[in-house]
Length: 232
Image (cartoon, rainbow, N blue to C red):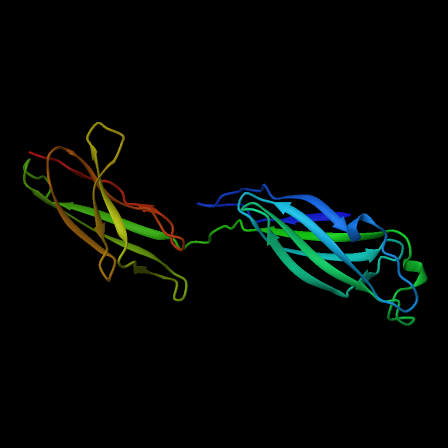
């Protein structure tokens, strides 16, 4: 048998990464398919497969090894989940001796092969590029005074190849104290209808302010460059 397991590598937030396996194949219950001269013969090709994300669909084809000719009379019965990760997928084949040129031929007797395709529920994402800016003012600022932090979140628009503001998105305002290498989230701000960001904070110490966007299923994450503010 030729076995083909089709899966998309998991890119982000998807369980499973190339762990699709075909664990069992049964053709006509393991018995030869015996065909006479007039009566059609029906048999089931069953596949058991597993993947951490679950099984999506299956496809198969069979052909005579001696002649390399296929047999197309089959019905895909679909996949039935055994549990969250395993499913059994079945195809029903009908072989008809028929007439010369349209049904089975003597040369096709003997060993046959099957080609199997299994797809899991793994997926990968194609995302729109995002841009994010930050501007904190006034600079410098008196310690304890109010600091206004503005910015804008925009993303690529593939319809006109321009960047447009990304509205109603949650963006984190973060601060990195001078001398530190770690940003800490201060608050969450929602972008306006044009993607604009604006909020106020109390200036407590020297450091860098930036906005950080986690991304969505359609748009990539983005971190703005830190804007350094000196406090007096």
